[in-house]
Length: 321
Image (cartoon, rainbow, N blue to C red):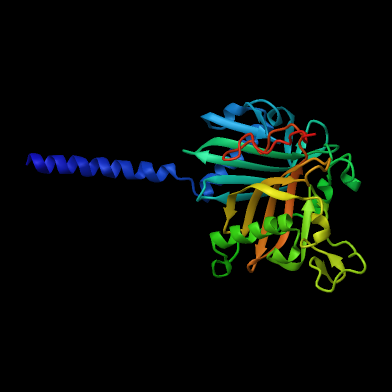
């Protein structure tokens, strides 16, 4: 009888623990709820309106902010473009689009949230604002100010879709296809990229593809489709030495979209700023079809990306004389 009582109590305890374990996981609906609650709290300038973990960490363009600082003070409303992505495997939720600020201008933003126990543990913001620092000398139109065009983005936003299950690509392949873009840039070889001819790319809302292709290109040149450049264009890779600190925190299998994060390093000795970027990769039938970015150009002494496993990494140090 005593043994039966012990077994009954153990079974009851296990039954009580099972729902608690399941409750700790955050599925798509849960992630959407937390993301919306967080965004509303930011716009209301009220950190107490969303549950944050005791160790909550937030960065804005790689600079650490505490709750109530930075974007909590400047955000006034969500913008014309609002896309939400969810990864129940990593329990990350994300927002890409525009955000209205007290300056009167819209920022082109990526927000990544890490959810832990249905609370926000991490918030990583990428904010592309009007007049933000450019790449530097020799960068043409972006020498003094980064690209910025929220209105063009509003007119050409990422597609909203649910990919039919029979057409979905595996999580591993989604990451590999995305990484082929970074490999292509590091190799400065458009043929490495797994992409559809004619693929488009918007940088901070500005279309950087679909331009007239240069004359006298080699017959096998990558990145030209029907006389226009596309995302495989090698001319756009000249200023990139390597793509480092690569991360893929959000793989939305339902949307066929991946968030890739990293840093573009410049050629050694070249006086140009690095890019720290967030890029959204839309994948159709196993190939890249569109890329949307929110990125910035940090100061030379800034530590980026400032997130594990690359916290405080990739500084640009003075060239030895």
